[in-house]
Figure 1 (cartoon, rainbow, N blue to C red):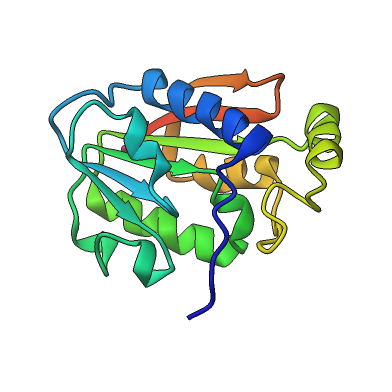
Figure 2 (tube, helix red, strand yellow; figure 1 turned 180 degrees about the horizontal axis):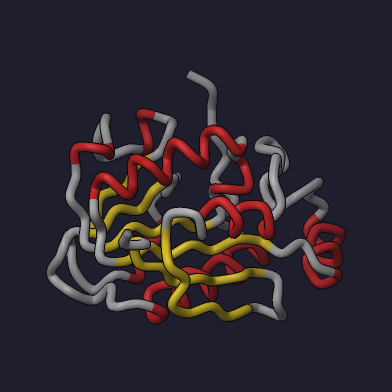
Length: 173
């Protein structure tokens, strides 16, 4: 198995800690309902959720709590700094899967790649936030895809505008 690097250290950890904390407060995620942390990697988001009813799913099987996230019926799906690493077609299929799961809310954190993030990359000496997983799509392109399926209810920019945090509900026809 390829060894995957956990970037949750130093300045990157401080940055991600702020994002995780804000992610848990934008929506109603402190319920006893099921939460899916989609693309959760090492599961750091679980440190910020007050209950144990959070399922971590990642494409790396060793980092996942489950094999097939589509079998879940979560109250909340959280996607934190993940979609930018996926192709448009992968995101589209994932959103279709999410919609079938009928969550009450979808929370997405995306990097904006502004001047502050470029300075951060320079300071941390990383080629990008995750140098071994390239960004394939911009946050604006992700927003366009998501908003075809989900209704934006709240959006804010956090950590010097380096991350866009959005709360969505399923777009009902």
